Image (cartoon, rainbow, N blue to C red; front, side, top):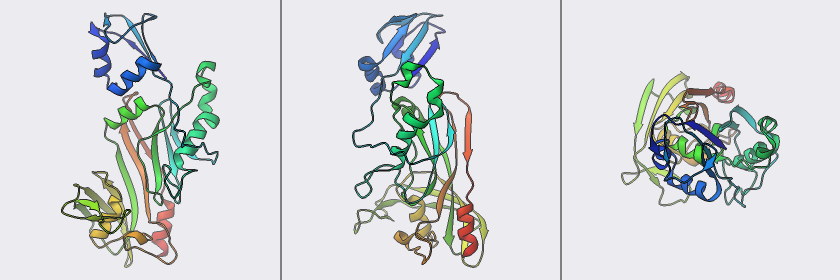
Length: 296
């Protein structure tokens, strides 16, 4: 991956890279397996650049972990550009490998797609065709939560995404009639009796969730949910805490005889693109959750 900059004023290269949010890890990697070129000549970070110089930054080639096995199972690509890819994750699929499900995770499917199936492979030159694209997961979802997941196409892009706010919106179906609007601020900690479940606890980490009720009947509510923090199982724990567990979530008191996954989907993401510097908003429908709501 290459970036080209036209220098507007005198500045050291190191200062320029830091100002453009290149991490120490990325700068070190560039020194080992990348290139810093000014006016077609290789330089070091100590170089003092002048106005009207042209800087080319060649990011280092990345290689996927040996534990990732590319999976040719098709994925649903919702958005893709040279730096990011956003896909729709189905239920019953891990975002990344786990001990119980070591392969065919979403990241392994994306890894295969980017290096074997992506139409953008036809748009780049032969040199780039020989390079691997390694996906880095920016947002992740529980195995049984469906919806949008963002991947960066290089570690540097992943770092840039970590410096911006990603507005993630979810839709859930929960038991009972919630308030029309609500905010849940309750710290979340690991459950002492389980390595999987979380619980509201005074010794937990701060967690904040807000929601807006979209529909309700005498059995359930359909809500739009906003995460203000990113704790494990946060929405599931918080809705159980207020007495409205998610339908189908047998881990948090929401078990249902016919629905065996929690009724939760990330249906919208919004953020300022770290390279294009423009707002990106991506949405998908939530017909499956509306169907669940309607049959209750």
